[in-house]
Image (tube, rainbow, N blue to C red; front, side, top):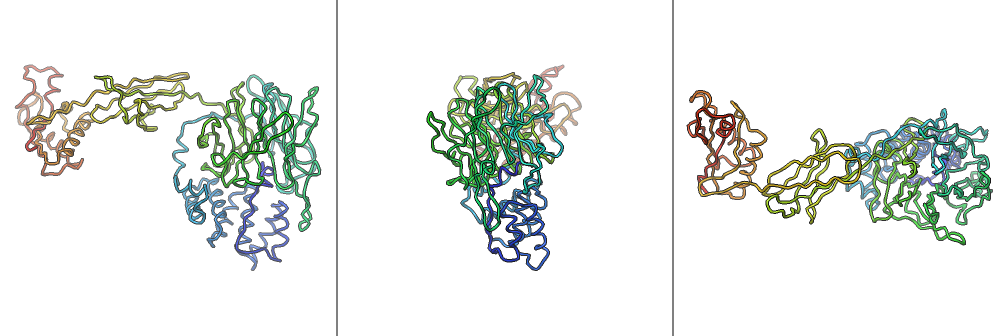
Length: 621
């Protein structure tokens, strides 16, 4: 997994119980990031008289840091019996989300928000606690597929495709005997593979001139393919701090620049703002080569790790700048990737997601909030390091959804825009604040919006997919308008509405006919739509009293038609009562075929349909 990346970015919790002599051995292992060994020692303490909140928290954190979320949640549950440390509840909620236990995670987030109400994560939770359904149902941005870059039990991530179809990535698949004591896996090396026209890759090979005995990568490549920035463990350069209490050398991630010469990467130089006090990692270079984005926990970070940028100047580098709260949170933000059109992809554990790290995107040309890219890129597990090659129209990201970090391909879903322009069919006047819903092919409402001052509303839609607009406006007939399939671009629908035909005279309320099917007395959809207009009129005129007259066609015997029309009258009355009209304001009676609207002999089917109706006599205005 990518654990070395966050090694120096982990926020160690401070709890009410102090370290003591009994935890000294376990604490030294924990503080030197040897979490596997620390777990063994804390487990011994958890089964002894020395068990307390501190031990439980350290155990949970140790498991959390090696991404064993089931064990982490078990010990977080024990640690939260004393409600005094907000961050414990946040981490507990995160482990529950990874396991798909969203309701239980919400309970822990409620406590977190009560303990730390000003935290941006708490505010986001309180504003939208049950966000998962809407997140899961949002329009798909990418289709994904596994790649043939696989290794048995090893971790691969940080893939970046150059314009020459070379894929660089980092992996633990190296043959080195040196291992990271944190996760008992080999240190990371930089590898490369060649992409074919079909999207498959050649057998990966080590970029030997860049790899050391410690962690190397991930990388970013300039548009011309001749300049690389990459991350490297400080141990490789002798850049580390000695921790005398734990007798360990603690190195940080730093960024380095390399230049390609004769097919090899040479002239490796450290960037001037590297430090032994904090990490700088996950580089991403803008298309023009003038801005470098990266992740760091340097001073003035908003959270455990933030996304930063720095200008690349003729004589060096500018001052690193934090991207601010639209991107960063008190949690972890890392793995930035900047596209050719200035869209930033990054991974976050501090924004609302499915669990673990989720991939987000934000257009840096606009002042907007970052948005979750949704499924299938994101899952309940860790999903991160999404990069995108515009020329090949393909992205690559990593996920541990199958147990080990692996590289997946992400192809953008073709998205078009459907625009409804709503107007009065009779006058051509635009209609503002009309309600426009977009429906899928099964008739499910996807989203509803109101038209703007230009009578317009727009939705992003998938290409080659049919949709329907359903448009409503006061005093107009509700209409449906099909949206034709499109390959790309815009589909503009002229949604012209007909004014409602509700006429109130001295003696009756005249609607469109409330028709009944042959030999039926139930209210049809068309009838309900008309009766709703009557309900509106009666609610606007609270003293109005209505007498419903129901009629049949000339088919059948008179006695039967009287009974049928009576059922129709009562169905109509019952519908009005169900909409809140009181019993003293509405009554009805059936008249059979004694008062036909159209006198005919014999009658056509259309004439019979018009005679099957209800009328609405005003008894009192």
